[in-house]
Length: 202
Ligand SMILES: [Mg+2]
Image (cartoon, rainbow, N blue to C red):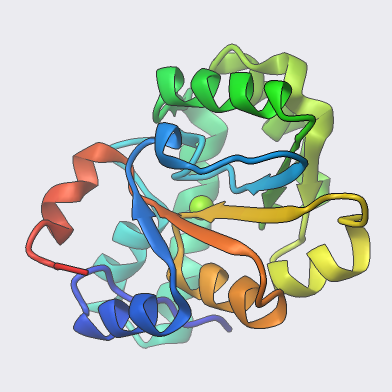
C-alpha cells in the first residue's frame, strides 16, 4: 500500500525544499529548453474530475477507516467517479503554451500515469472528452508501480538534454527525483485546490 502526504502537512514543504521540487499551477511555468523530454501525469495534472479527486476522498476516508480499508474504499469510489463522469482540463491555455514550446525546441511530451493498462480505453475516452484525443498514444501506464522505476525501465531518455517530470502527488515527485536526480520536478496544483496550500511559503 502507498502512503500519501496531505497537502496541509508541513512535512511536504520540507520535502519540496530537500528535493528541489518546484510548485506550479500552470504549464506556462514549466521551463522547456532545447531537447527536453517532458513526462506529465494525467489525473489532477492534465485533467480533473473536480470537485472529486482521489487524495481528498482518501483523506476523508482516513478519518473513519484504517489506512488499508480507506485505500480500498477510495479506489472503489474513484473507479465509480471516473467511469461515470467526464473530466475537465485543468489548464488548457497553459497546456497549449507548453505544447508550442515543446515543438519549438525539438522536445518530446509523454504522459506517465499510475493508471492500469487494462483501463486504456477509459483513458482514451477521457482524452477525447477534454479534446486532446490526438495525444492518446503518448500515454504510458505504470500500473500503480513506482513512476521512477517505470521511467528508467521503459522510457528512452537518451538524446534528450533535460528531463522534466510533472505530477500532483508529492510521493511520485520524490520518487522520480530520487531515482532520476538530474530531472526537473514540478508539483502541479490545479487552481481550485490552491486555497488549501496558500499559506505555505517555499
Ligand atoms: Mg495525478
